[in-house]
Length: 313
Image 1 (cartoon, rainbow, N blue to C red):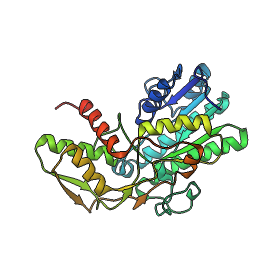
Image 2: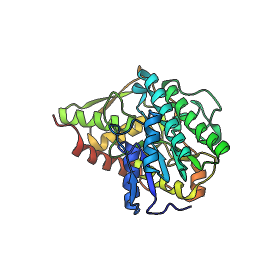
Image 3: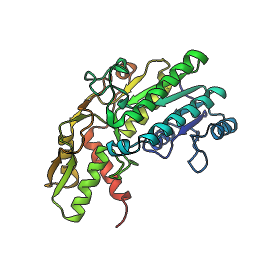
Image 4: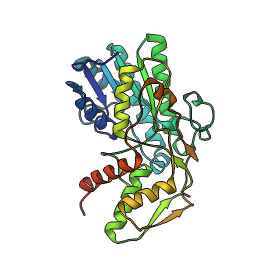
């Protein structure tokens, strides 16, 4: 099923990293009726408000990419906020989409749904196969609930609601706040701050040994549009590159781009999180999609975006 260019398409969370990328991708693809609603106009945690919005706008296709997100520090210190906000957002939008007859909904989960010690690379069938990573357990449980919600609505109501699980994301519009950001934008910020302050030593959280996979958000947006057109099954689909890198090597890569010659100082007293998280993307490749933005190029373009958008002193 190919989404018509004139279809009413709602991007829930359009101001976020992923949502803004999907809006860009839809516009580039010729979509003429992309619907959005900011927090000041629509609280996605409020079922009544969401129902009223859906009654007025009647979206035919929905990208459910809204949510409360953050790195290890944010997840560890705000677990109640993370689980409440995300549970409510997922439930209200999915229910409103069912009630108003939305043709198709894509729900975006997260690779943190998988067990902390999952077999690498992680296949989709490892969901619920072991204990979660404690530092983001609340967020992961909310995401697992969203997947189960979509599956349950498929089974009971026949809704064409699909789920995709992206790996770690980065790109223009990312969160570079050191208290709440993920590792890659945090590294860009740290090296940039050090370079501008004339400091040659940059402290890196943890040991540097965990391995992570990184996907540029524009690639994810392209994959989401592809799945909306080409995937109608109940099975979840991993979205990633199929390759990973150690945090230490990532820090070196970012340093070489942002602050060449800087010295890295690792702080092993800080948590590492999951030892390794690499997605098996063979299911997505079999459907016909692969990423196109390599990590080095993606980091360079993201840093250029940050340089023009960072807060002024």
